[in-house]
Amino acid sequence: MSDFDYLRKLFYLTELLEQEKTGTADSLAEKLDVSRRTVFRYLDELRTNGADIGYSKIQKSYILQNNFDFKKVFLQSAMKWHSNRIIFNTKTNK
Image (cartoon, rainbow, N blue to C red; front, side, top):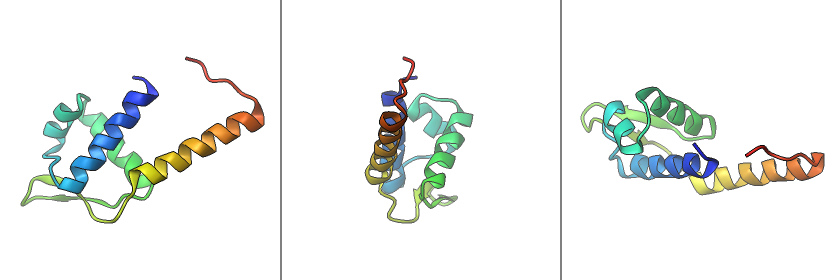
């Protein structure tokens, strides 16, 4: 999976969390076209970056419980990665 696809899926996941429309882990895996295990990895990635994510048994959906700003967090992360790449004059393998 390309970096773009990965970020696109994380962004879509964040939108679903904000709308409280993820569904169960299985239905979320289907929506994102990934495995159930990858859904949990994505949720953990968002949590690591400040998202407070819970699960509502009533709504049968994962929900975002804070004002997590995906664009801000991951833009800052990308800028830091790019800065380090310039400082250390490294290239990425594609």
